[in-house]
Image 1 (cartoon, rainbow, N blue to C red):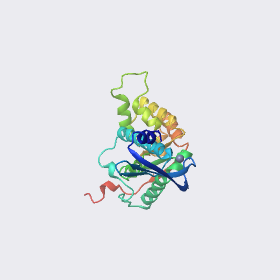
Image 2 (image 1 turned 90 degrees about the vertical axis):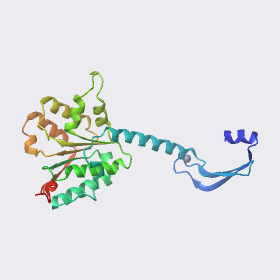
Image 3 (image 1 turned 180 degrees about the vertical axis):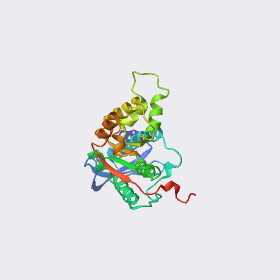
Image 4 (image 1 turned 180 degrees about the horizontal axis):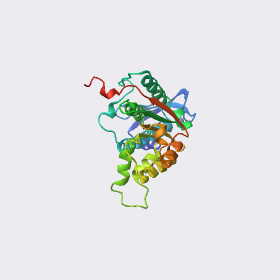
Length: 257
Ligand SMILES: [Zn+2]
């Protein structure tokens, strides 16, 4: 309005009209209006909203997008996992069909999952497509600007080890992993873990107690029981996690002789 007055004073605006639409802003309840400005040169401009809420929403959406981008950048996805969707997942067994169904449900109802801090532990042998399904969840939610960090445990551990000198500071990858709306920690137990690695895993799982995490693993619960330290991690992981077990044939080997 100040700007309009100034421009009127400078004679750039011939006149302005305000018309109330009869509707109220969803955000603040103020009456919505259309401001029509006629400029001295005959040009007419309409500003439909008349409410600052639209602009606040725009700024918030932009900030949400910038944050989501940072989590996408910090993610490590190999090969073509960024292209994986539920539609291009090829289920070859009933377990795989069920797993895909449950994980799609998780992605489709993510706000509910967030409010209940629901987690998933996806267990299956090599090649059953658990990483594909986890990537599909990530790709769907990333497109909606959720803050999703996708990283395998071996890559996470590598990141922790490399190039971070300031030991008094929290490692950036830990910060991302701790703060994400959803952490997808792929391939838990894929490599034999050192004592330090198991303790770092526990630290991470513990830091996400009230958050949404999807773990994928080829370890059975029996194998998690093989060491006390690992079992402690497993117990913490399972506090709020539903287990999804995928068996079926090794689907990456399909059609390969
Ligand atoms: Zn408003």
